Length: 90
Image 1 (tube, one colour):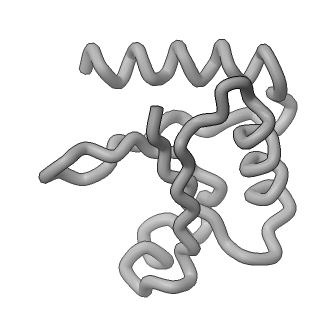
Image 2 (tube, rainbow, N blue to C red):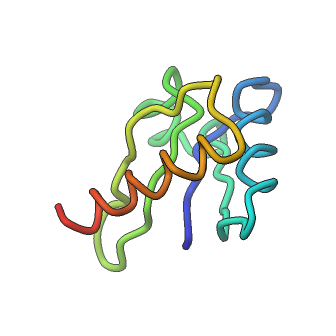
């Protein structure tokens, strides 16, 4: 599975989510995008990071609902699977 993580440097919530995602078995293919590196992304998502999205070829990435910072391990894996299944059906 491939995911985009909209993030910013120095954000403890962003770093925490990235660490939790990389600890999953198997870990998702994760591309971390610093919103502060692009004025458009900063304006669109600057106050909402961390955000997860599913890339869609030829279209805008599909944003997933906000992840609770309390989720980790199996709970995060279940939440992520539910969100990805819902994204496929939409």
